[in-house]
Length: 156
Image (cartoon, rainbow, N blue to C red):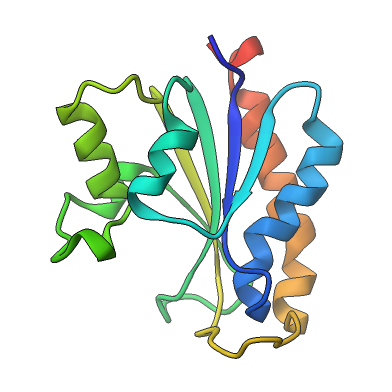
């Protein structure tokens, strides 16, 4: 059995898109004895390598829905994302990755939690973290820690 995983997605070159990565760095210091923490800018099928053989995974990411003010935390499950619907293997998301893992019978997490922070569209390379997102990072770290704390000891 492998340890539980916090998987942070984002790009720290694009301002607010780094929120999950920055939270993961704090969580690494707080939870290193209990969970593995991995940062990646990859997505889609590349996530299979990180998720395979895990029992519990918390994914930290950012979202742009326009439904919430920047800095709002949104908790989701894979079911909240809907079914697989990518139009190309180059636009594969988590639902398609999960569907492929099940189809190929790849050992996959029984528990996947998603904690995302609402941001404004982030496209400028080298942009700094906005004040709203910087101010919300402690809440993201705290909520992520609480999610991990709710898992059974050892993540099994």
